[in-house]
Image (cartoon, rainbow, N blue to C red):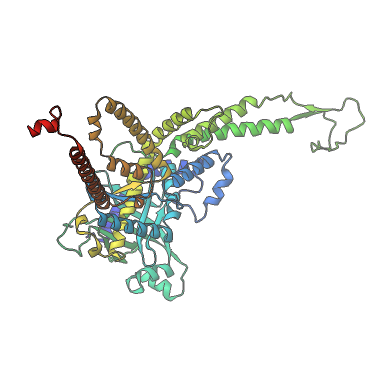
Length: 543
């Protein structure tokens, strides 16, 4: 366990390590994601003013399309998007296992619906796309089982272990005296907070430090009360030695997703926003030039003779009083004949590059005219191949940990009791299958390959029928249902299927026996009606 000075040193080190990353995040926030990021010196809700500095919303629009596409394509609230399986496919054939996993799935969906998960996910998607890193704390909730506390760049600092996995989290945030006392208890607060509370200064704010880090003395399975991670809270600048709260977690309670990393040992990721910042700077410059050009056309600089003393009225319909002299005149300083077409085309070209950088063009549902179904399928597959790694990163580093932590909370809080788990599942690791539109589209590329393979198998089987014995038709049907995201509950339990087949085989055998007896009876009848002659079989038997 750390003392307060050691904990403060960890936070200071993490802040220093994050300096370069946060400097880049500030640029992204300025040009690409005005509503994201909260940095030192910023005030609450200060991002509203940031929108007034934006000359073009092209990056914001592209980001919105991207985040909406990810949300609807991966984790749509209105569709079934996850399915629990076993890494051992034979276990999935067990009826008891299937019933239990279906029950667990329903509980997970209900928790997601009731909690703030669907509110938090688009914030995490946007944070990752803009800054390359997203972070959320999965908290216990008495009513909804879980609650996700999301953060934006500048509000937190992280570190990783030797495997490149995030295992340390720190943040500094403002809390009012009232909230500090309510959360941590009056008796645990330092004297300055107690004094402010006693004087009814409830809205006075203090900076609170929060650090979650590994317990270096933790040994798994030795002491159930000894947690794998410590959680420390203390008031920043407080000279007292005690923390205002010390807690612990059995596993790292944070979800940390990094979009793209330079190396596996990078604490922070690289966002799409970083690639767009130079484009947006260039776009702002072109827009300023366009506005300046338009202003010169509408309100050009003018030259006037010295005898005009009253000022020049350049408003529409304005009158300028001048002496009655034929030499008095007002004219433009130079001929303003600016062709904006090239500049507008250049601006539009940069706009397309920005949309492409955010994959916004790949999420478009509109096909080009005169495109055949085959051509459209090929183009869709190309798009999905590009998105493949991008989407899998969200699945593996964000959604899988989220679902695993929710399952942990389900058992910790007794929503499902441990004794309800089938014995055959104890010690087994669950496999999480994703069924969203994007995940299904990825799988359908594989199903297309499967269809081609079956076509080839069919051709080979026509030459050598025995080769079809290599195919397990039952597993093929279940794979197709799973990969297409169909409800496997409409499929019979394998044991029931086997029973039906045994009954069918038994009926078939009975029919064959009946047919054999009928054939034998017919033969006997024919033989009884036949005459015994020397030239037939009966005659020979008679001899």
